[in-house]
Image 1 (cartoon, helix red, strand yellow):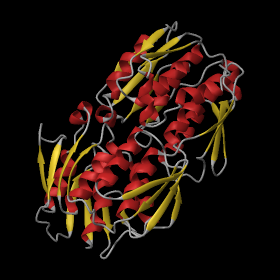
Image 2 (tube, one colour):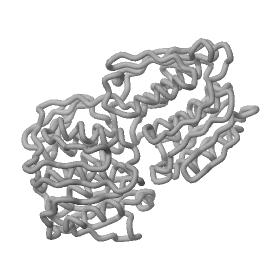
Image 3 (cartoon, helix red, strand yellow):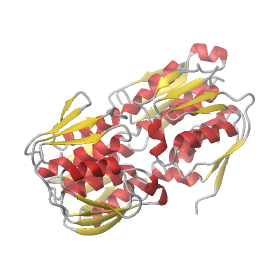
Amino acid sequence: MTPEHLDLQPIRAVRGTVRLPGSKSISNRTLLLAALAQGVTTLRDVLESDDTRHMLTALRTLGVQCKETGEHTVTIHGVNGAFPVKQAELFLGNAGTAVRPLTAVLALCGGRYQIDGVARMHERPIGDLVAALRQLGAEIDYLGNEGYPPLTIGPGALQAKETVSIRGNVSSQYLTGLLMALPLLGKKIAVHVEGELISRPYVEITLNAMRQFGVQVARDDWTKFTVPAGARYVSPGELHVEGDASSASYFLAAGAISGLTGGGPVRVEGVGRDSTQGDVRFADALEQMGAAISMGPHWMEATAGAAARRSGKLRALDLDCNHIPDAAMTLAVAALFADGTSTLRNIASWRVKETDRIAAMAAELAKLGAGVEEGADYLRITPPQPWQPAAIDTYDDHRMAMCFALAALSGVAVRINDPGCVAKTFPDYFTVLAGITGL
């Protein structure tokens, strides 16, 4: 039974090495592509979490043979673009990395399906993706509010169009879902992105995953993507999933914060210089704050730099966070340990994540004594004077729980309400954190 809360006593220091769980973004993309491919794929280091369980359950419901053949290893017998089950109801929890791509794929592969999730998923928009799919003749209807799940998908009368347009300024998952689905049509088709494309590194993850399964998408800047004629997914045989770069941010920040008072360093293994994930650039932001960062092909390490150790504080920063939307949440907590006011900009996408993360962050940072200014797409944070012990509400959002645990490095006690929400991406997060604190 999951406890209602977890009380973290002040953490004096952290030091050590953490082996990261697999990337959620890469795990769910490759699980779906392996299912759609021709041939058998063995995926290693797959993340075990709520989100990947929802994807695997959905694939099995659709008739895909998915077998767990070892620890963090899944072998998938691909269906060569055609799911055997043509009518199904899928419940996908709050897994955006499952809802968006599956909606697109099912809309273009024929059959009748219903997609649903938890109450929060009913508040997470999907209208831009549906509008793009309807341009191709897809049959999609909303069961509740227009533009939001739950929804039904019919076989549709798909059209042989050469172009389709999609908005890119709400969520990059819409473009990801569309691109992953288009090879099922077997035709050359160009996708034009309307407006600014946010979270571009996540689209790069998608393009890389598609490439590994034999589909090379041509990218013209970030405004046009072309899927070639005759594209089809073919199994690469075996793939290893990278460690999760977003999860790395908590431990790197812990190493930098603890280094201010003689702790650190903290090393993460499973992601590094050779990573395809944009969130590795969190290390650059942390370095701007005065951290000392070391990096190898598949590892990263952080502690406080010499100047930060002397001052006992990190440096405040003003940063456009469009390229690291998830890891930027960790920066918000790191900003509590800075020497002045920090501003995180271009984070409007936070409002349509697992919760409204701008509002949630503002409320919980204030509990710790911080000065907070919340805008439509920014957050301005002034460190506490003094720090206040606090009970942190997590809003059923795994990243709220994980990043606010770092507040215990301040010397005050922190209560994390609903700590079990970390199961979405990192079920043993608090155990791993305790392992480098000696608690």
